[in-house]
Image 1 (cartoon, one colour):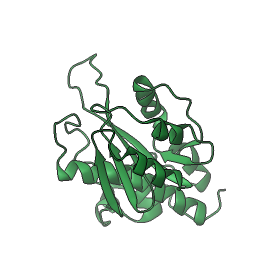
Image 2 (tube, rainbow, N blue to C red):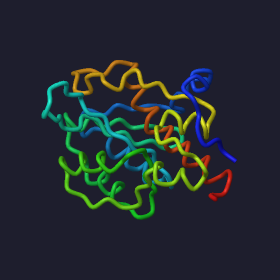
Image 3 (tube, rainbow, N blue to C red):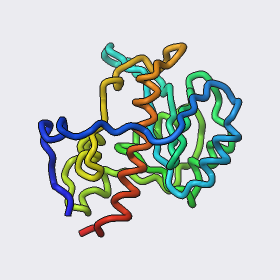
Image 4 (cartoon, helix red, strand yellow):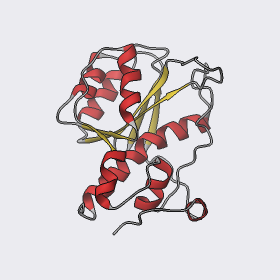
Length: 194
C-alpha cells in the first residue's frame, strides 16, 4: 500500500529523479518524422508543456514547449518556433497511445491554441492516484510516494522562450514528462487500486 502523504522534509531525503534515456530538442520540422515513428511505437507516453512565466497580472504567454516521453527517449518540441507535424498531432489524437501527465487539462488547451486537434486517451495522474490511496496531487510528491525519488522544480519559472534552452532546462523539461510516464507504469504494474 502506498503512503497517503509525504512531507517536504521526507521528500528532501530522497534521491533526485532524472529522465532516463536520450533527450532530443526539436526547433524545426526536422526529425519530427523520427520522433513520430518512435512515439507511435509506445503504448504509454509522458506528456507535459512549458510556458514562459508572466509576472504581469492578466498577461498569459503562449505555450513554448511540448514534451513527449517514451521509455528511453524524450522529445522536446519548441512549439513557439515550429509547427507540429501531422504525425505528431496524430499521436495526440491516438486512441491506442496513452498520454499521461499531471493537471493536463490546461496543457491540452494550450496545445489546442496553436493547433486544432481532438485529444484522446489522455490520463491525468491527479485523477487516478486517489484510487491507490494517495492524497498528494503534485508531481513532486507523487514521484516521492510511488517511485521513491523527488523531482526538482528549480527551472519551473525559467524563460522557456529563450533562443537556446540551458542544459538544466532541458533536463527539467524531459524529467517532467518522463516521470509522469514512470509513475503511471509503476502504479499499473504494482498495487491494484482500492
